[in-house]
Image 1 (cartoon, helix red, strand yellow):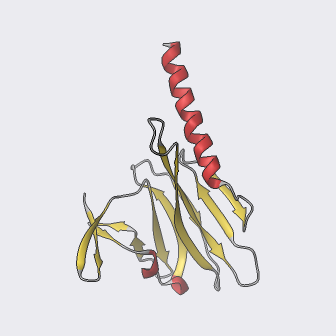
Image 2 (cartoon, one colour; image 1 turned 30 degrees about the vertical axis):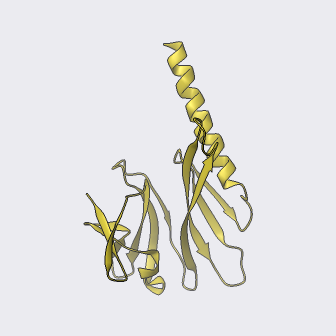
Length: 152
């Protein structure tokens, strides 16, 4: 399925991500980032009404990570795009999906979904090298794949 969003009067296609957010409001209604051909922006979320925020794997596996914000908490979401060995035959790209919440006067709580789907949770600045962790995960997965082929 193709997904589009309205960018100041022009429709632009958006490629689906490996992980997408979903919001369940207190009244039970759901807003999905990718929903029936429409791409919703994070800013469309009515933060005051959120009962549950979740990141859902879009491959149909059912994998999901959830947070339940309390009143006064602000949820956030962004992508950390990483590229190493840029411009070479060894070039690799990976995305870390970052989401969490902040509450006035307290450190933010950050959830990092790494390229393999592993989840790390930390407070402000507790995991400053998520891009490096993503790189190590991808390289380790590639090494296991090569080792498996050698063993066959």
